[in-house]
Image (cartoon, rainbow, N blue to C red; front, side, top):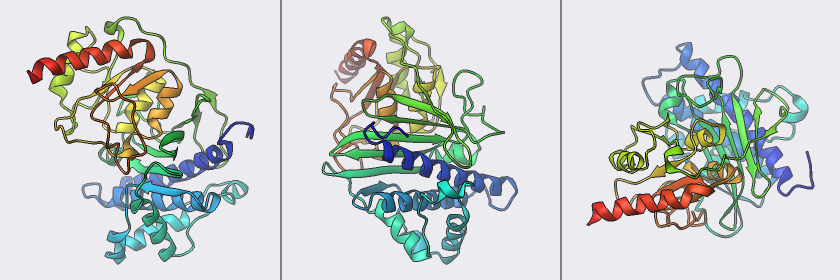
Amino acid sequence: MDLSIPYAKELNIASLVVQRATLLTKKVLEAVDKGALDKHDSTPVTIADFAAQALIISALHQAFPDDKFVGEESAQSLRNDPELLERVWSLVSTTRLDDPQIESLLAAPETRDEMLDLIDLGGNGDGGRNGRIWVLDPVDGTATFMNGQQYAVCLALVEDGQQKLGVLGCPNLNLEKGQILEDVVDKDGYGLMLSAIAGHGATIRPMGRGALLPAKPLEKLPSVSSTSDLRFVDCLTANSSDNEKHQQVITRLGAPWPPTTDLWSAQMRYIAIAVGGCNAMIKIPRRKSYRSNLWDHAGGMLIVEEIGAKITDLDGASVDCGLGRTIAGCYGMVVAPESIHGKLLEAVQQYLREVDC
């Protein structure tokens, strides 16, 4: 670990806690495959969400006791459901990395009550512009997680409203096709992890069961001069986005539609841009009032920015991560290589002016 790089200790701990949490989610999926859990109800993903959040926050809270948290889950439903509580506790208390020396760097809850309180550190976190805040989504892509498709364990460090670090563990990520496909998964290993430190680039590494495996730098996004060379990632089944408007904008640009890559998980769409097969994304919400959750974007945004993408809202403003549990000031989104972002943003704005007339 190169301690001369800012946030090097944070990156090391964050990468280890994400790797441990991905092993936990894999255990849940194995239980589904063996019939121990019913994939047709919400129990498996609920257990994975709570248990992963507890393990992540436990280790970070010990390592950085003054830091705060924003997480998707709160523990009230576990307090109200003793059976669910026991299932989550069983998973939290037994999931460890195989390397004892590495595992010793990571705290884990010692009691059920401690586990509940740790989960609530995230679920009750308000976010904001002051100080250091860890933002986490234990399982981003719950529907595809249940289907054994693509999902991510997501963690970001936001300091004074700015992303400083992002780590995304993608347990099913398999790049043998040169891009991400929902059903092309890593059946033999533990997937891939992508990470970034602000101003210091982004990396990718395979995940394992113990010490971190070697990482290599992610390549920069190629420069794009023509909008017809844009290749979009989208989610055609998303309820929050207006895909009819997406289609109108993208076909006007001369780019392919349907999108080159179609993924349910919001964070996996950033990963798709980072690893190839696509290089752009737009989000035109169906409702003017819609705002995304912070944990659906923090970390993934940083990774693609570090390889040369520019991200703004539909007005061209940068995304503010210091406004609470949502990206409250951000209506919609445009993501593209910096060389072409302005043209793409202009095309989106022109189309929206026409349809709003």
